[in-house]
Length: 174
Image (tube, rainbow, N blue to C red; front, side, top):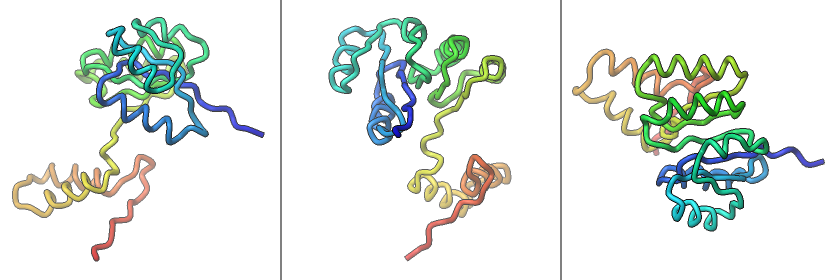
């Protein structure tokens, strides 16, 4: 019995979108990249060929209308995160939006509200959070004298917590 794959669309085909496209290849038993949206037609065609994607849109709204697509990854300039997320939520698509989530707290509140209203998942990509290289740098910053009390608290939470609230094992030094 085969499990159903989550069908994804990527909106915006800039540099960061390639990391997401690569991740879909790694997760090919769980997800399938079925469509991309890119305003620049030539770039859209080039990326579709490179990724083996058959559905290509130059208007993300058309991608959002596709009933086959269950979730979208939004890789657009920061100022577009909010309006596109709102439209994706209203289209019933689960959303992974690149960081930063949006431009201000009011936009974040509206994005969360729309996601809840339409019973969809909204997640902000914090891809560096569990990167050992990033965590190592943060640990070094914590040990340095160039930090404040609030920086220490933030770094402690960042380094020692998983999204579920569980503890993270620190890598042992050799």
